Structures are given as structure tokens and as C-alpha cells.
Image (cartoon, rainbow over all chains, first blue to last red; front, side, top):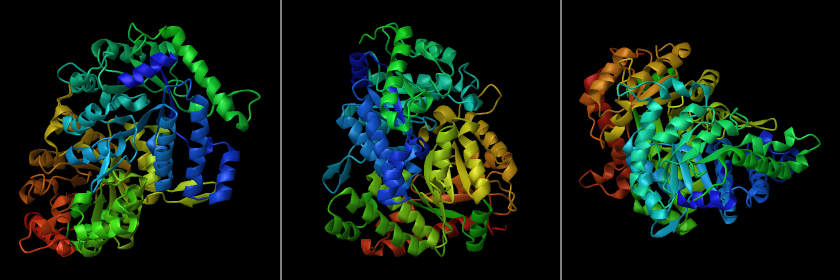
Length: 309
Length: 309
């Protein structure tokens, strides 16, 4: 996790831009140009997503440390969309951004090894080695226990990568299972958090945080603070800022006394910023995204203070 | 779920062939031919997976009702591998097989809708409608609660599709979270099972089973029986037969008195059957897969008896 934390401290910006490009979010002039070239096809749609992402990355890469492409929005456009995901990852990394693929992947043993190889590792093809997707980090679901996490830990150690395991998600119904009390007195999400602190124990870096982070929603500020206190080596990925209702005063509980410990995501807020600005048109989408990213950075910095590695 | 159950009863075969094609499992002569044409590249590897799957589907489609491609093994070969997944799904469906994409996908709200559209629905592109992957069923992880399941229920109803939610997985460490006791006296996996019975309540078909199934490992026969009794409308997808150690005497607990209620998966056992047969060579892989599929069918039929719709 040190690589991500270093970037956050350098930029004094603990935020990540979610790249969840529904076709509706892509400005019409980009869509039209791509449809003209490739037709109203999965290929045309995928090309539009990539062009949109590329312009957003150009507008954000010197002020925002990381991007988080959401796999679902690429799969929705078939293998052509998945190719746009790969191109997006490559482009963001070429611009120095830390890439967190939001895939919430989960499986066991050899199959989890395959997901790990796909998203964080290198695929061997008869002696040749190639990165299938090559992100820096992957979100995962820990419901299956250690068998689903161990293959990730190995690659995190070997290749300086990280993971974020779902603990307390930002959605209204997250509590149906996650808030249930176990006989040991913990809730399910606390139990998941403790398991993550354990899984990370051997990978604590200079920053004091391990390569195993967790996802905790900005929409549950009390739980953020409670988990921050209980999980001192676990870095947090915090969705739910902005469009889902969380604000700076909610997310501040995720940070430690040095102003680190968390990265806060905004997707629609940044991608669709031009629609909220009076006087902006779709042609201004990239500049509006940059303005919103700066506003969000300053909003959070105002409550968190200076970030010290 | 009625469509799947009808196929099972027609073929008197409650099994599904897992298509988890690691490149190592693909016979050398297929690999070599594809590398010659496309190089030792992701494209070459993906082509080899598809050729392997195609031959397996040809060998199985008149005796096995369903296939279950595991998404991880396709993602491992990049977008080219994901294209091979799409081609595999199309080919299996063209041969009349029911396709369960094993993706264990999970997310919330609009993002879960995107996964649903990707795997079970139709993607709209400026008025054009196209199936991105077009499977009949998808495995999902229910950790996020109803927000992660509702988008699936809608598409299951509209397009006669089904889902399988992870309850008690087949791996050794599944109990770390899933077996924990809640204050209400249930284990986490029982709670998940109950939630699934609830999510399926509005989609119970002629068979008596809803469109919301669960995944329960053959490696935990007692839990299979216990869940079978408690969840009368929930169909089971049962991994863990064969390579993972489960046998017919273990999986029988998953079936109801009419011999239905479950479908049992075998992946490596079928894909790599030729390696276990004395006298077989890699050229015999498809015939050997068929022989193993028939042996597995008869093995399970011997303990379950006739399947009556």
C-alpha cells in the first residue's frame, strides 16, 4: 500500500476518481464520433468509453493519485468493453496513476489464483509472460475466507500490489448481513475487518499499513471511526462520497492522526461534474471534472489536515 | 429455473460440466496449432481455450444439460480470453445447453444493474439492443444484501434467467466466516440461505423452485441435507464433486424426493478425463470427457433415482 500512500502524500490528495463510464455519462459529441466510426455497436460504445476515460485521465493525472475503473461498466459492453478497460488501465498507468480495478472478485484456490493473475499478475503462455490487465490493486469479496485471499497475498508481496476487501459497503441494504451480530459479539463486518487485519499482518509497509485494505462506505461514518480505531494497519477505500450522500465530515473518521489511512472515491461527481455547473456544456466535461476533483480534494483536506507519511 | 430443471429431467442427468480451461488442461496439439497461427500470445491462448471448449461441448451437448464456464480462467487471458468466453457461451447455447456463467459477481444498485445487463440482459446502445455475454444464469455473492440482488431478480423475471448465490462454498476455509454463529442462532451460511429463499419467493415456477438458487459444496454433505430441508424452493448448484473430494453419497442430500433440487458440477474431472484413463492420449480428450460425464451421471443417478419434474 506504500506506493499508493506515497502518491497521496505527494499530491496532498486522499481521493480516487471512479471511472464508471455508463454510455449515458459520455458526452454526446464523443459518442457520436465513435458511432460514426464503428456503428452503434459494442465496439463503438467501448471506443466512446475509452475516449471519455482518456480525456478524464489527462485532466486529473497531476492532481489525483488514483483511478478506480468499475469492471461492471466495461463488461456491460462485452469483450469490446473489457478491452476498453485494459486500454484505460494502461493509459492511466502511463500517466503515473495508481489503478484500482473495482471487480469485487472472489473465488477459491486455483480459480482465485486465476483472478489474481488476471488483474494483478502476469499470465504465462508457454514460456512467454504477459500482463492480462495489470492493475495495481483489486477490490475483492472475502465471503469465502482465506482460500480466496491467500493467492492475492502472494502476488501482492511479489509485485508490490494491494487489495481492498469489502467490509461495510455504502449501500442502504448492506446491513442485512454485514450488521448482524455474531455470537462472539462482533458484527459480520467487524469480523471481516479483523480477518483483513490478520491477512495483512505480514505485509505492513513503511507507512504502517498492510497490502490488505478494506472497503467501508462514507455513508456509515460511525462505523468508519470504530473500524479505524480497531484496525490500525488496515487502509480504507471509502466509496459513497458525493452522489451517495457522504461528505467530508463523514469521511474524516476514516483517517488517522497523520491524515492518512484512507482514500475516498468519487465517480459520478467527477465524471458528470459539467452537468452540475451552471454555464458548462458537455465540451467542458474534462475541465469541469478537474474543478470538481480539486473542490473535493480541498473539501476533504479542510477537515483532515496535512497528510504526513 | 424451470428451463434448467426441464433439461435435467429430459436427459435424466443432474450434472453440469465446468469449463475452467487453464491452458495446461488444453491438449498440446490444440495449443500448438493455435500458437502457430496466433503466436504465444493472449490471442493464441484464447483461441486454444475456445477450440478446447468447442470440442468438449460437441462431445457433451446431447447428454449433459448445462455448462458452467468459470470467468476467472477467461479473464486470465485478457480481453482476448473474455472474447473466448463470449464465443463459448454462444456455441453452447447454439447446441441447446443451459449456460451458467460462474462469475460470483457482486455490487450495488446501478453497478449491479450493469453486471446483470452484461451477463444476463441486453445492452442498449443508442436504441440498438445487443447481448454482451448472454448467459442463462450467473453465480453471485450476496454479501452486499438486497441492493446487490434486486437488479438480478428483475432480469430473471423478464428474461427467464436464474442466479446462484454463494451460501456454503466447497473450500476448506469456507467456514471462517460462513460457519460463524449469529446471535439469532443461525450460521452465516444459513442466514444467506434464508435470504435467498426470501429473494426467490416471487419467482417460484412449475417445478416448485425459484429463480434464486444457492451454491453449496459437495464437500459438506450434512449442510447440504440441512439446507435442502430448510429451503424447499431453492435450487442448489453443487461444486466439489470429483477433484475436490465429494462423491455421489455426499451430493445425494442435495436432492428432493423427486430426484430434483440440485445440479452437480464437475470441471477438471471431465475436462482432464483422458489423463486418468489408461491407454488414452490427448487426442482422445473429448471422448474421454464424454465417458466421464456418463460415468458421473450414472454414479449420481444410482443414488438419486429417477428425476421427476
